[in-house]
Image (cartoon, rainbow, N blue to C red; front, side):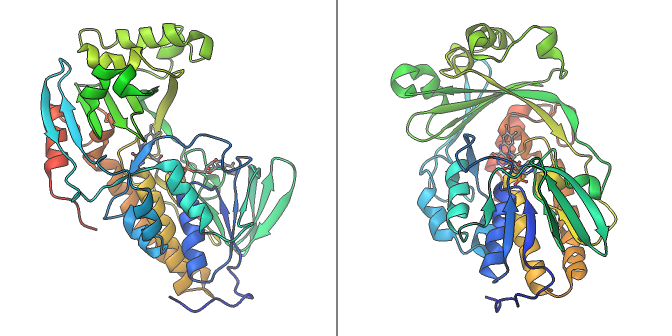
Length: 397
Ligand SMILES: Cc1cc2nc3c(=O)[nH]c(=O)nc-3n(C[C@H](O)[C@H](O)[C@H](O)COP(=O)(O)OP(=O)(O)OC[C@H]3O[C@@H](n4cnc5c(N)ncnc54)[C@H](O)[C@@H]3O)c2cc1C
């Protein structure tokens, strides 16, 4: 571990916007290196929003970040055993792959909320300032920036990091790029006590992850804690398709909405459409957006981006992993050059740009049922692509 940085270091405290997995990993690895950080987060508290969903944390990126964060024991404690099992089903319910979790896979599944809590618990109190929504940022010259919050408050900083996700408020300091709709939306559903209340769907999903792909659309589901099923239903439709079809995502409209979405899977096996029609929760719509692949910017003093703020891609199983790796790598670059911010940021961005571009073209997106049927790596036979993906040897860094 490096020796603590002098309190008069020009980088301290590092100002991080966003307490997602990327921003928190940055703060934690800086802390490991004795560098102070303050994280400004729009949400009012750690529990303001359900963090939902399982994340598979990969041994070639997310786990490397957790090693740098000195949190591997805490990570192992939250792994859901058995959830690396994989089933691939044809739309008619035929099982084309049934791979048990033998405990040797390199992608253990953890609840996103638990992982975020591990990171929060590892930080000194007051590191995260909740209820601080950034409304604007302004360059003051010589690498300094002013950050304005929605309540009118301001701070100035020598080192500003935008870890504020897809719709980053920091990004405009560096690039005019804005995320564009990728031509696909996902509808999320949950089925509770599935083994007893939704047995056919529970059997179809099995003990871990299930994907039922077809050209363009797919149903993807996880068995989360206990016997909760969480499904992601991918639809290749224009962004205004839901409004045009009067599909309403309010609580009151849920039964009709679920029936309408299930209609798009007419003819599919009932144990698969049950993941839509039998949802115990109001369905949630997620419109998928991405930044241009290979986005780069000219180095500007005193500011950089990480995670989705830097290289938002359609979900491909890598985004959270990559945000964490970005956070760890940026922290290490700062620790290596605590008195030379520009050298640190240049070194970080030199490696981050190709890393972010690679993830856009990695065909793991089919694993999450959200792959574009016309994008890079798109398969003519999605089931075969999934088989190739999950039976391939694990990637190495
Ligand atoms: C349906 C779906 C499924 C996915 N599945 C996976 C998966 O299985 N594996 C995986 O690795 N990735 C997955 N991803 C991608 C992953 O969620 C993101 O890549 C990851 O969360 C990015 O982390 P981040 O820290 O960069 O940003 P975020 O997680 O978006 O965090 C940004 C933080 O900044 C805060 N913020 C935003 N604006 C402001 C503001 N103005 N002021 C202050 N704070 C602000 C937000 O509240 C948030 O806390 C999935 C994404 C989707 C949509």
